[in-house]
Image (cartoon, rainbow, N blue to C red; front, side, top):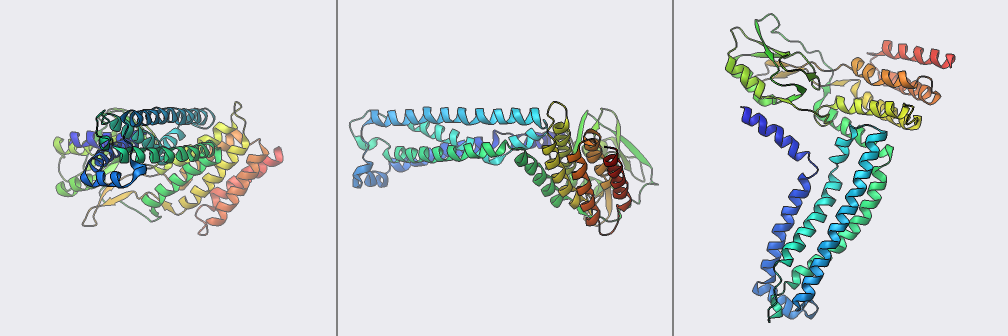
Length: 408
């Protein structure tokens, strides 16, 4: 069980690493270079080179020079491109929030570009090792070398587009929009419409489970935990929301059962739960809302003093909160027989609204930009709340903003 947990943890680290896609693409290029050399030295490839005079690269020294020059050039291109990325990441961390680095590093496009650069370099170096000084010029891998030249031209155009992409990526609007989209996508994937969810096992005897390590309670293997609960007739209640930092040996689960829960079952339950640091939005949409709030707070700090960025972040927050009005993470998980087995507390709209909006208001309530945008945001959210679930909250905030505006 613990081996599966360990593998699951490292699997998440590997696929979220900036090196994952480049490594896969580089391996693909290596295999592609082997295939091209097989074609180059096959009878079919020799016939093509013999019939097309412009493919007749017969001088091994020339072939070696072309390949070595391209390899060196692509390496320089790689260093320059990703020096720019590091500068952008440093700027984002210092002026917005360290938390946004996760989504920026995990950007797939820049990983694919890095993979293409590294893959072309691997292709060139592998090709360079196959060029030999022999009397029969047909043995020089001309097809592979001309394809390498074509790949180099593609990389140059990719570099030009990458420059434009980096200049767009550094804009605050782009970073905020990316965090908002990731947050909304996660909510659309995981959240369901609001409905009443009750547990039926609270009166049963229970065994407390304590955290076996410190860290953020990020998620759990739902299928495995439901299987354990169904097989042994257990009911599992988590005491803390996902994303909560837990200290080792703190009680965070109650396992309800008609009989005493065995120690082996406790170990199996702990093995299905993931503790690790970080704030991945794809695991928990609440992280995305809090990142948007942090960006606004950082923009309003005296060192940055950029209320315009705070307003953009507030607008993104309002868009995400509008979806959150009538959707939430389901608290109860059911087994294959539709029997409720697992309860995980989740944040209510009121809690999230206070956690995200209150700090921004505390920092920016004396700024007219923030006052106006906050007023506009709450009016629109109040209008979107067509079932009047949160009218009292919104009216209270509207009164607070109006009083502050008059005082200013």
